[in-house]
Image (tube, rainbow, N blue to C red):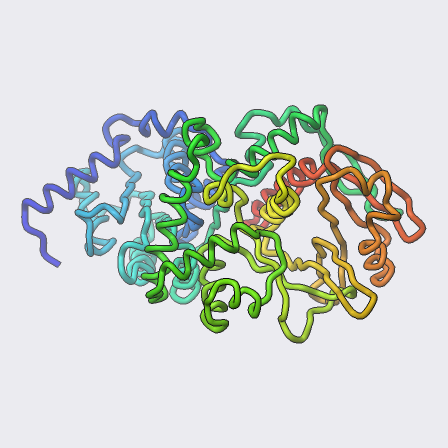
Length: 487
C-alpha cells in the first residue's frame, strides 16, 4: 500500500504524540500516578525477555486495565535501562491507522525516530486494540517470523475473537495472557487495606494444613467486600467516587453496550441485538441462579437453539460463565437439563440495576457470584452439586472435580450467614450427605464473621468468613497465574 506524503506526515505526527517518552523519557503523568495491577509482576517478565521469539497477546474484557498495564510495562522498561526510542506504542483503533498493515506502522515509527529500517537494534513494540485490524493474527505472525530483534505485544478487548485467532494462527508464535476483572485480593491491595488480613494455617485433613487468611477487623473487611461486589471489578471505578455515584454511565455504556451492541454482533453476525441484550439483563439480574434452556427460552422468548449460541457468545466475551451441574456423587448428568450462570464480575449487576447492601434479597446470590469470580480465571474443573430424586434432594455450591478420577476432591458451601456455624446439624444437611457419599473428610463453609473448625461425626468443617475466603482464593488465583508462566 502506498501512502501520500501528507498522510505519512500525519501518521508520524500521531505516533510522536502517542509516544511521549521518545522525547520526555517517561510515560504520561496520568498513567504514571495510577497504581499498577498485581498482574504486572507476571506480565512484565514475558515482555522483557526479547530472546524468546513469541508475541504476547494481552486479552481480557473491556476496562480491566490492559492499556494501563501496557503503559506501566513501558515505564518499567524505561526504569530498567531500555532506551526510550526503542519502545513503540501504536493504538490500532486510531482512525488514521485504518487498514494500514502492522509492519507498515512499525516502519513508519522507525522513520519517525530517524532509525534505519534495517537496524538490528532491539525494539519493544506494543499494538493496542489489535482486533480493529482485519486478519491481525497473520500480520503479527509474519512480524514475529521476520524481526528477530523485536518483542511484539498485542492487546485487545474482543477476548473471544482474540483467543480463537491466537489458537488458530499463533501456534508456537503467540503467548496468551488473560487479564481478568479485579479479584478481591487485588481490590484490597489497591485500596491499601492488606494490613487487615493475616495468614493462618487451617487443617485440611488429619495430616495436612492449608494456608488461609483471617482478619483483625471483620466489620471493615465485610464493608470492603460489599463495596467490591458493587464497584470492585474495574480499576477506574475503584478509585473514582464520581463513577461510583453513577456506575451505569461507565460500566453499562462503555463496557456492556459496546460488547453486546458492537463486538458480539460484528463477530458472530447477530442481527437481533435487543434480544441478546434482554437475555443478558435477565441473566445478570439472576446471577447465581439455576437455569434450564426450556425455562430460559420460555421467560426470554428466545428459541432454545439461539439461546445456546447466545450463552456461548456471552461466555466467550467473558461476561458470564456457565457452571455445570453434577449429582450427589459429583458425576455429570447425561442430559444437561440444569446449569447455573454467573456474571464474571458482580459489579456488572450493580451497573444494570442498583447497588446492593447486606440485607438485600439477592445478597446471597451476589456473594456466591463474587466467590465464583475469584475461581473463574483459574479455568479449574469445578461444578455445583444438585440432586432431586424422590425424597432425596440437596445442593452444594462449589465442588472441585479431580479430572483424572472424575471424583470430588473438595467441597465448599457459600453462606452469607453465621447460622451454620452455630447449628451445623440443621443447616448443612446437603453438605453432610455429599461428604458421606463421596468419602470427604473435610469441607469448607463460609460465614459472615465466624472462623473455626467443627469436628462432626462425618468429617471436619472449616468455617471462614466469606470475605476472607474470597481474598484467599484471589491470592491463589494470582499465584497460579505466576506458576503457569514458569515464574
